[in-house]
Image (cartoon, rainbow, N blue to C red):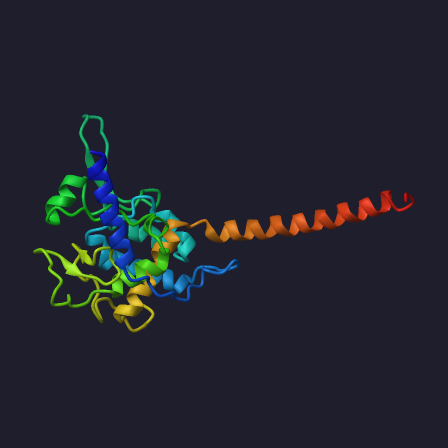
Length: 246
């Protein structure tokens, strides 16, 4: 058993070493005082809803969370009502479906893992709620993965249902290229290129992974300012106390 684990670790290490490091992108949220671009978040949610949600869920995000992206309460209620949510049991002990409410979590495409694997040739599409936090290089990796599909080299063998991606560990990925130019029509008129859609949906997933980021940064700035102020006050007090003592 130890030998098998060691071999698996060696294979994983070799795959990681042979994987191309994703190039760094410029993100509005990547600075110490950075914030999320609301327009990009809304476009990214549109890409997720129209493209990614066919296979991937965001089970930790509720409809009312979308208010932080700039959506109005009316827009959130209208969006939630488009979904059918399983609820119950009712007075007869039976489960039933009802229109979604802002307090509901956004439902995923599958009810369980086995159903998801059966629909994807055995592969399990991971939930996207924390995907940016869960991957090395974070947002840069997700963007690179979405734009990294290429034709496989001649000496590289792919199994049926696999695709070549230069940034995926091992390069053989079971997800087909999800984006193509013009796949969505942005409400704000932005041209929907593969790169633009990948950038926007990555920004949205970064927000989904840490929707409290802006508040955390604001709080951190206040704490640092407080500590600097108290340090100056304590230093001045110390100088005054010890002023007449040699």
